[in-house]
Amino acid sequence: MSNSFLMIPDSVSDRIVLFDPLDGSLIDDNFIDGSVDTGLGIFQTPINAIQVNREIWVSDQVADAIFRFDLSGNYLGIVNDSDNDGTPEGLDNIRGIEFVNGLIYVSNSGTENGAPGDGSVVVVFDTDGNNLGFFDTGDPFDIRAYNGTLLISDIDEDNIDRYTIDGVDSVFDENFVDSNGETGINFPQQITVRESNANLLVAGFTNIPDFNNGGLYEYDAQGNQVNLFNADEGFADRLRAGYELGNGNIIWSGGDGVIVTDPATGQDEDIYTVNTLDFRPSARYIEPLIVPMEGTLDLTGAIFLGDQGLDKIFLTQDLNGDGDANDPLEVSVYFDETNASGLTEPTGNVFTIFQSDSGAVFYGDGDTDRVYRLFDGNLDADALDQGEAIVWFTDSESTPLPTPNGIAEGTDGAIYIVNAGTGSSPADVVYRTIDLNGDNDALDEGESSVWLDLTILNPSSSAFDIEFIGDVAYISDLVGGDDDVIYRAEDLDGNGTVEANEANIFIQDGNEFGVSVDFGIAVDEESVYTWESLDNRHLQKFVSF
Image (cartoon, rainbow, N blue to C red; front, side):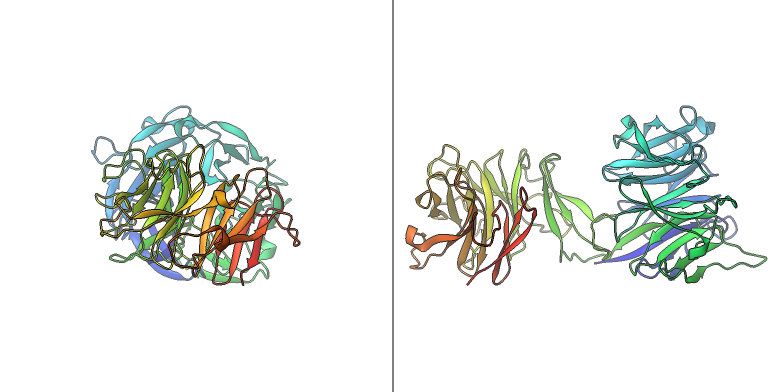
């Protein structure tokens, strides 16, 4: 479980203020006090507070520093202070920052303090605070990772530019939004992603009276403007950021503070707009903060994802309830070659992942020809610690396993593994594996057997996935040049093996419903689902009787 917030710096009171990500209500107006009068005395103009794993990094435009805090707001130090003398270096006039793929990208627009290049650059740091270098840009004000690229707002040209996402080797790709600053956006500031449709919201800070172009711009994934929320819709000019809340309203920040607006009606609600002779807020960028509750680990709704490019298994989870796993701490490495169990290159070609009722995760790897068992014994959300990973089942002379394609658990507690053979004998089979002696593997005598030889059903078998509804197994099979099928198999006589008369075609291509069968399948208590990716490209549902 976790607590979720939105962080917005106030550069007048020099504080980080917290808001509710569902409705925008004020939670804490003094989460981090960096002011001279009452606080740490470090902030001068804080712009952007972002979460970097289990830390908060705050960019300060005038202090030329990135300040580090823990998730409770306790001060840890300055990122860009390599000699630890308390003086920041290497940055000047910084604004928006972004954390993606283990790197922090910082917009820089000056040459003081040893800042690199001509000043208009993006400087890249790793999570330890090491300055890795820079790449040239226009005059950058904000940076956002989007669809595998970096979008950077350029206030010199009033454009939003797309760059590759390659650390210090990032290069310009194209003008994502090409504005003339009059009929289009002027002075583009923060870029955020709208949760409801994955479009972009970009704050246009400057309003030119003849064009009335100040406000919050919405762009689709191709950079086409699809909306403009301006003063007529309740969004004033001098906007710095806009962010879609969980209830569909938009919280926005600017020179007047923080306001929530219903984009359908234009109705406003002042949230943090105190304006007296003594205090007038100036709100900056809006970012999510996720603070896990200590001592708990709830993986309800979590999804394990095997990446064949990065050679890792990721744990993905929606911690803040917004329907995705794109926020801080929502994606982490669950298992890879860095494991302390001594398993060498165990994730080079992950084919299939399955979590059993016990909580153990089983996955098949096509490079090592093995099925591994992972178990997070210390509840730290990974299986990288010593003893948390073991070889469950492996290729041998009697049990060839060149392609462990599908894994499922039967009602008997056994783990069933589909092997698609290539020159092996038996070629395409379903193995039944079970740990009889409690050593967390199925490598001992009597712990594995051929449950179903698929070649007796079709010599051209090429099986992929398996699922159970009760004692009945459903197995997808592309069967070479024949019509793809899903088999129904059940050990009716209880002898531990499925004979030819105990298996039949459940459904196949060319069926009367006109739907196709494909690699992966899933089940609920009564139905079988298959995703057809090459033809109809949608989910098929078949009812089991």
